[in-house]
Length: 83
Image 1 (cartoon, rainbow, N blue to C red):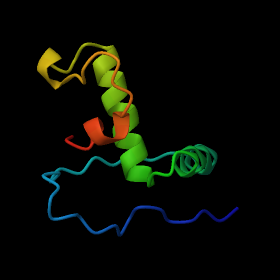
Image 2 (image 1 turned 30 degrees about the vertical axis):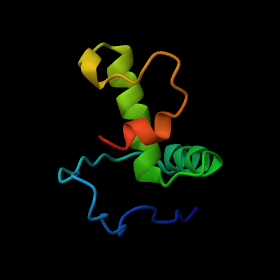
Image 3 (image 1 turned 90 degrees about the horizontal axis):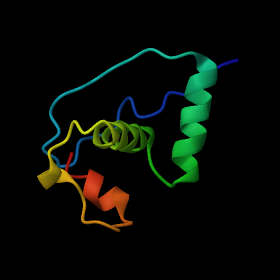
């Protein structure tokens, strides 16, 4: 089953300070699931995966409290963009 290339040639926005690249290999099935979930949230794969990673780091307490969104904040997308 051919898989579509997603997010491999996305241009960096000038306002982004994101300069480091993390890469990983996944199975075609896992990639399909990730692409589906990202699209369901209206995000590209990179932004969706960044959100997942940030949420997990917050859950583990690995991000400083000063980087946490205000209690009750529901706009995860805009908060996570700073990362």
